[in-house]
Image (tube, helix red, strand yellow):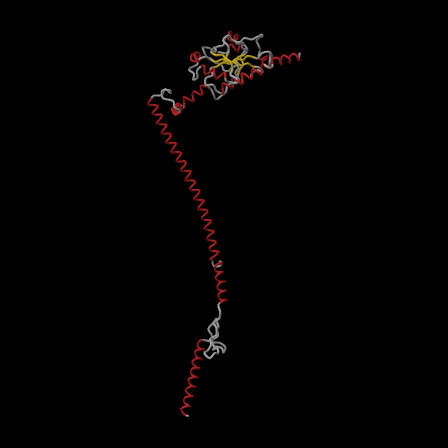
Length: 361
């Protein structure tokens, strides 16, 4: 029996990969008007049987219906849950027409053909039923061989009924899914209505005309004027931010320059004082050069008398204090002058005595 089961699964196995490959790489197919035609028997299943993966020869056909206007992630998540309810699931999605939707729920943003196309390109969908009924009837369930109906568990009040899925729940064919909080078609429309002026301005900027947007001529001019004012404000704001940034950069650079100048000035002053200060290298150099000049300067040479004998010249001498009494070896200007005068007087006297002797003779 195990071998037969394996063999039966092996025989039926290739159909599932082909079906998955078609579902992932190609759009889902539309349901036929005549309904689903199966080769084998289509017995009624329980939820427990479907979760165990039986019957093995056919997938469990799950139906999920809705409007699917402005198809969003909340719709996709609900269909993903319906697709993963059982190990082998064939998901059928019913999309109501514009006529039924406008009658029971309200005006839609997308047309029915656009909503059909949005559903067949969802990766979880295997089959799409166009113009689906608002309330599911036994004939419709039998026509499409539907095993279970998937929807959120909140009672759906519409068409004079407190819950349009009440008879499906009583029949044991209802499987609940979870709603995605924070996103819905009504929420998206509310955002558009709330920011109506922004979206009108946006579409006018993208090339749509006032007639396309159902906007009057005066309102169009007002919106365009407001758009120009906003652009001017944005330009002024940008220029102001750039000017602030420029001023900040200039201040930062000026502070850096001042700081560097202070450092350089301190260094310059220190070098100057080190060079030209009292104990600086310049004074040491001057003292050293003065000593060298004093050492290299020659003494005065002796004066030669006319007769060829050197005359006596005053000896160079230095005295720290003025002499109180001249010593024999010392010399002074007064003594030199006195000695000179005395010598001349003596020479004059000798000359006069010589002349007198000659006269006597």
